[in-house]
Image (cartoon, rainbow, N blue to C red; front, side, top):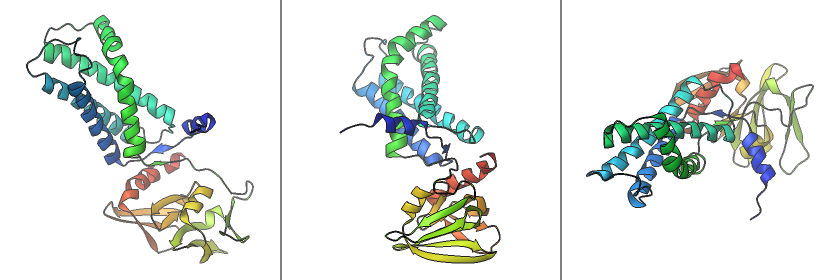
Length: 285
């Protein structure tokens, strides 16, 4: 299979914001710790480098728990304190490398002060510990964690607002009907939301100050591809985030209201956290 290195480079440079869906990070961190413990117990990669211990299996499980704790705490801090920072996949990997370094230092202290109890804690010994034990081992750990985040428990990310298919000078959206030359042109600030209706989409917007809607053949998937600034809040709805007035309710039952109208649309449980986090950062975009 041919790999497009240009495509990979562009993907790594694409900016996005992290979502507030903590379950994804927690799952990834727990499985990371499980695999670390499993590798240490099953493959015994450092058998020649450690001294004998009567409860060596528990020691290795402790190493896995340290990795889990560091990654959970790291992403909790990131999601709470630095949620307006733009990321790309390269920056995200570098953040994981930083957490890996913190993990190694804590594992070193755990090994020296709790397991071995020899008190031999010096910078030189820590450096040797990193080079001999951690450096050959942690690239595998980083790959596992990144794989969990992206493939197994894919984190929800949302891109900064872009202007695809929007006239540069007028901020007009040109929505094309599938299988037709028909185009519906709407000013960006007038669009409220788009609802899926089987093989059609129903576009809700303001025209000459009046609320109206328009039905055309199409899919939400195509709409989201053409207009990446739109936000998916439900399997049947995408919205213009600029016109969201308020998010009501909690993750179990939520809805949003729009500026200039009374009706609401539902927000699914799976999209609630990312929408809430998005709304908390939109003034900084």
